[in-house]
Length: 288
Image (tube, rainbow, N blue to C red; front, top):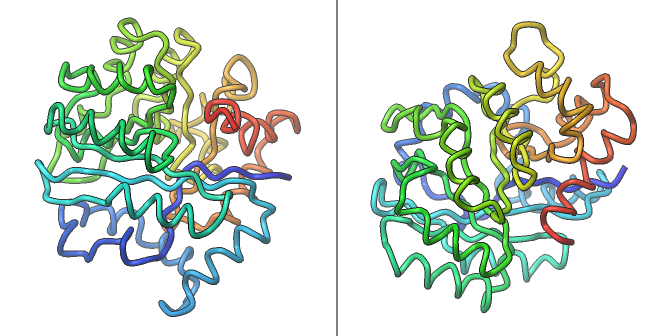
């Protein structure tokens, strides 16, 4: 089965800042400790990139999305658009880059996004609102939403609980996205992770707005079929009315890619729907 992984961080220094530079994410390492350990599989640092690339070869992967991000104003961290673009260029057509800009930088952020798309060849925008300490419907994001429409690129918006104890949960609530889509119906959005603990709200937003997709990112797919996990509605609606709107992303190294794909294959989904989740829906929203 052909695969598009809508979220992965290659194991190179430029895209993996030292732990002290991302201390605001320390609690993620506690939450994802066992899953990240399974993803690393005792591979040495020197061999990590070769193993990473080979693992995607083995899965028949068509594309992998790699995301920059800029949270300098809030946390002093930036994963540069240029570094993402360089990695994508150096490793052929498989890798697709998303830009990261800091909405607190005003016009500078808008110009940086335009440069990233028009000059660097990046194919979308990544905003992790909890890291910017900004809500999805904050007016400071609206110029970036308008620019995404003008440039005809999708935007990835963090839309779920976050585990940073230096930010607030409320920044990822999907009801804020509903307001944005009323104002910007042409905006192509991938809301990820998939809304927990407000999964039903995100489903409602996606059902209302045809340009909203749900990224099944940074969550083990098996939990969609676990009673009382809170993810079960994604299985019901993702197999029916929203089957064209669910997009798989491993968030490697937060979990092993092969295990996540196997868990999707084990879900009680129609075979045609599995293909959509793993490839077709991402190809559509990314206009590949």
